[in-house]
Image 1 (spheres, rainbow, N blue to C red):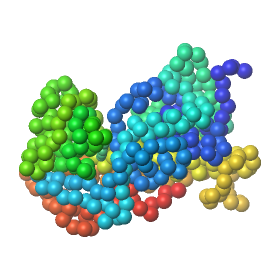
Image 2: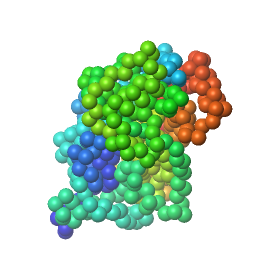
Image 3: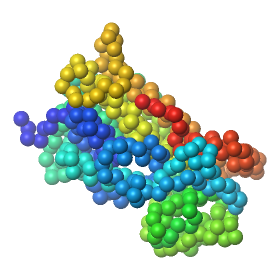
Length: 421
Ligand code: DHB
């Protein structure tokens, strides 16, 4: 036998948060998994991503007992500030819907998951090249790759999870005849900076003005994350530090409203916007999770939270699928969810299709919220005066009514009561 061959229950393409969380939760259920990732651990750890976690995402990190620092180093946010033309409105999540969100950057989530998976002896191949998946329509799907040392590798599994991010190779393995790609694009992007400055305000500020959108987020006492709306073709080097801060201050409405804390800029990037959904999220022995199956624009910070809600819905369905293969033998997993029951059809992949339907139901709610919040808070380059005033009316309808505020709070904090599993 080829020395580089592993045999596991589940092969996972992608070692970001979706892939690693799936691997860890499967292991808790006695199911073996191996992960292949194209990028280096360092590259993933240092890529800036969003920083807001919904309560169920935090619960997953805590319940998985992986030593996540989310509760000690993360910060609970009981509300956020929305600002339009320099007038601020606080949305009180706790008062409106009884929930909070946590500021804990995705890089830290990744670090916690990667550390735990490796500490538990989990198989992972970083910097894998030539990653390919074969045999999805057979009973023996395989991941092949070239490892970081240039040696060929092979993972034989019962099921493949494609958690390989927004440029997913796995999603293209769902044949065109059965796959629908839903897209929309936006005429703007975000210019993101990290700077050496303390927090400007106790909570995040989502601000909108005549010159577009800005978001003042946070990282820690010394580092701040901010974004402002820009043209997708912007060269980050074309903006000086002073011009960036002057512009963000203008969006906030001037120093009499809030005084922006400035500091040396240590990173500048332009983040493109797009919305994408792949339907279905499964084919044969493949399931997609996280950005591989759906991408949202960053307004509302839904990306990682959707990835985790996928994993929450997916893991019990994988257990069910594998039990179906073995007739319930050989797995230590608990049967805490509805089984297929006596007389059920022999289609073993039915649980995977149920996962797809469950996930897409939530994904479309998040697509709606991310699209809506984006359009509410950004100024399109061709926006006319009617559209601008209409948008201000919409903003006032949200911030000026407890029901409007509750809609925002419920969506932003992740839809209570939405069990999705
Ligand atoms: C952050 C990013 C977001 O897209 C968002 O909506 C909130 C916070 C962040 O990077 O902190």
